[in-house]
Length: 411
Ligand SMILES: O=P(O)(O)OC[C@H]1O[C@H](O[C@H]2O[C@H](CO)[C@@H](O)[C@H](O)[C@H]2O)[C@H](O)[C@@H](O)[C@@H]1O
Image 1 (cartoon, helix red, strand yellow):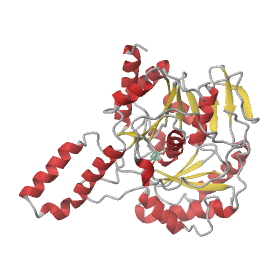
Image 2 (cartoon, protein in one colour):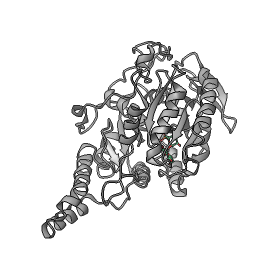
Image 3 (spheres, rainbow, N blue to C red):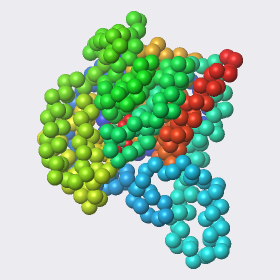
Image 4 (spheres, rainbow, N blue to C red):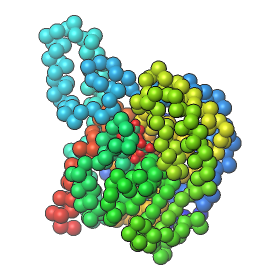
């Protein structure tokens, strides 16, 4: 892949709504050459109206997005608690609902939400089959191929918790990631700063991309066709690495915005502003819902003065990031190239993630027929992924299964 060629028109907006027609998963993806997805000129020159901070966007429409990305508690199930417990068993729940309806028809009304949840879960399973139950299908397709693994952090390797500073991964998960990385090239691509996600994961045999892919530390490959602003550096162990920070010129601006946001949200109980180096996260998970509008207003008031910054929505978090043509999908392609794994028919990239920003990577894999996206979710979502896993526990099982398959398979 020619990293220097300019094949794509710079387009930047929050991910486009996903067309339902694209949600029909093909049984197996044929591998074809990836379409080049990034241009050397990452800075977008799109007018302010197209940058994500649309002139007509007011805090109220942000509020809608904040609510839609954070479903309310509506019935016996705590929708507000995004990680639905692992014991949710669709068949069992369906049976329970039918049983209750049969004997207690009056329960129909109060059980409607429950029934909807069951239906949605079934739809989720149909649209994005479990990567565990489809494991054989995945490994059949992977036979004779080199798997490259890309893992999101929050909500994928660690459970979602109230305090972002305490989003630790379990010892078992760390062991599973360490093991899988022995058999397959593995990278973490996170919205966190690279240093922070490295501290959480604490493993050296991986590659790390922080700030939603805007801070990549990857392997050096002599023959690679790197963008000009890609530099040589050393990692914490003193090993030579390649460092790519396409938004480096935004550092002072991000620091300034971080300080302004800390200041403007300091009176909002529960609000937390996190500096992720090339982006800033404003968390409202612990803010009373009646004050979400105030959070949105504060963020809006600060970033309206920065036309080169835009906003995206995550899991009860507003993410402020530079307007550049770079995202987790581009980071994935960059890492494949750095690993010498791009443009090869015998490579199968697998990306596991739970968040909207992971959709950029799922999309790159789906549209380029490159590999599999696996959505981590137990609640219904529109996605460009092919498969799903319900929670980090299932992610761990999947990683362990990959290791066992690799150990036992005769290739
Ligand atoms: O790309 P990721 O690794 O998934 O990072 C995305 C954001 O994750 C973190 O926030 C989320 O997880 C927190 C801890 O569980 C949770 O409290 C928060 O509500 C979630 O939005 C992280 O703190 C952000 O900086 C990342 O951008």
